[in-house]
Amino acid sequence: MKLPSSSSFAILGAGLMGRLLAVELARQGHAVDIYDAAGPAAEQSAATVAAAMLAPLAESAVTEPGVVRMGQHALVRWPQLLAGLEKPVFFQQQGTLIVWHRQDAAEAQRLTRQLQANHRAIPELPGLQELDGPGLASAEPALAGRFAKGLYLPGEGQLDNRQLLAALLHEMQRLGVHTHWHAPRHPDAFAPGEPGQPDWVLDCRGLGARDPWRALRGVRGEVVRVHAPEVTLQRPTRLVHPRYPIYIAPKEDHLFVIGATEIESDDLSPASVRSTLELLSAAYAVHSGFAEARIVEVATQCRPTLPDNLPAIRQQRPRVLEINGLYRHGFMIAPAMLDVVMELLGTGQSTLAPRFDLNLQLQQPEAAALSS
Image (cartoon, rainbow, N blue to C red; front, side):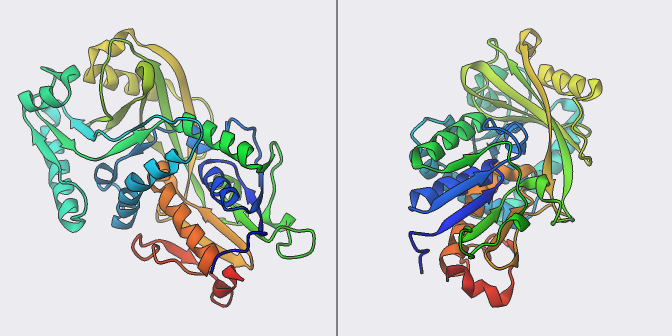
């Protein structure tokens, strides 16, 4: 059963999930108001400070199979979602490269075995390819002669997070979504279903939702954006290191996003000297062309994270859905979360959620009422 075309929605939080839901609902003809504590640039959203890599096999080393399957789902869905946007968004699906220095060969062997085991457990993932020096040079000419071995993970991808957020903003405006900037709202400010109130409230506020979702915590991340005309990496590249494994995600026009740090803290102060030095030193160790790069930005943000580091959707009162806990995998799992929410709104249940092992905390008497 589909939602009536006259349904109205209040979406709290205009980060990645909030914007995706606003566009999808507005495109289906629903009336949408979206509220955010910050401005249209999403400057307080974790999605703004991200590399936006879509790397389910690479991430399988640090997450659960359900999240990995969500990542596989995203590799199909993102091209479809981007095709519906009026403004172009950089999207690439040329795989992930993993390299290491000789002194870290043991750590690389451990990672290789882990990824191979994960592939056996989730056979729908493309298998990794082990590369020798010539194979590595063929796959990534910019690294020729720099590393003796590497791994290639085919099919993985990335997109430009800031282009996407801007394109979704444009689409919201085009579709007539009512935007309310610098206007934070709590779900308790609404009485959904009552006269003069929205039919539904969707809470996508991330860490802004710690009241009422008290289990949420912040996990701090730090990234550096550099402009490096001398570096021609063609795909996201990860460096194996026992203490600070980094990723380098090449965007358009020789812009690179470099990150690694993951700190159990909701501290939003500027990046530390130590973290910045480690990121830049590791990037230079991958390619010496980063020595002449220009630092565009050093940014910090906290990802909204639940105790099990997994996403969840819950309903604590009728007509209010809370979507949260996307952690470090926001762009990789957002399309799956979007599709599950749309199923819940349309039918009161989700056929996708079991496949993703997604934690649905729904009030059973109300689950069927989602479509009412």
